[in-house]
Image (cartoon, rainbow, N blue to C red; front, side, top):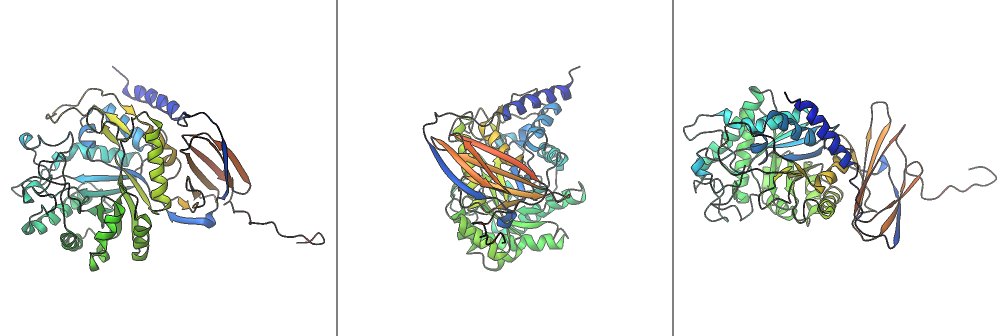
Length: 482
């Protein structure tokens, strides 16, 4: 009998050996520039941080079919704090698709997440076993915050009968007569997990990129356009339903997961009083214009702000430039956007599909054929984005404080005070240039380090007490007295 636990431990040890070599030099050093000194101090607190995360759509639909030992391996490398990334935020997808195999042929592998509500008005909770198994595995490994979100209303509530969108992507696909039914579906799912599974979603999000025009019938994934006026109605009804079913305030509302920051601002400016029922602003980060605007909007409204979806596949999975792109996005989102949570789209991507360079990990998802038995072992490919993510998530965690380091756009710093009053400090710095950079950071003293080109480097330091930034100039001394 194969000892799967031992095999998994050996694989994880190998992965960590690779992770230790994350800093990769690909260009010859020709010139040195100098930056700093940059003060690193709790006096420069910018925002509280809630953690890093991933959506379960769509990869959990396939990981949930793997043999148990391999499901555990994937969960370890994503959610375990000791041997993996230690992701602490999980976004669970409330499905919308027809379970009839003939109805999902247009969907990408994993894209047809089944609606738990059937057209006859009954629920089939067993349809959720694959995604639920990954979510519970994440919780067991230390994930802390869970959000439920919908890409589309169930297919039988839509105008087109297709959960991938209206025939016209600029038009709503949720039939107006089904507004209440859609809201009831969302809160029934939240209530089932609360009461039957002893599992609480902190927020529920009814939309995904709702202002976009690319959700149209025949698309390869679930999606639905909602005009801002429709969103306003749905959000008010959702708040009332959560109250009626006594699911609030433990479960609040997040919105609206627009494709980019500027669209999020435009949507919220049309909401009116609906902003009062939202506890968290979610926005995707596919374009960074408007980051400071949404930060100001969230701050003025007293709302948490998450960057709830980003991924990239611009370079080969093994190309360090894919990692540098990810790091640059993280720096921009946290430093300029001031987000308190940062979520990668789907951590595991289909290596055989058009998105094979996306994802932190890649696995062959296969096709949309029904699978009633566990899959055999499937190879896992680790991308440079995985090791880049580790540079951040391994050290900066839920409860840490992001520090203001705006003087250096390529450095992110954070601190955490332990129970014994000692303070952990993490500094992540990125060099996307062609040459060495010599950086200086001031804690209680001065730390200088030369960063090779095309690298991401993390420093983790523990102080017996909180470091204080030194004064800009030393006090003058007269007659041997201060």
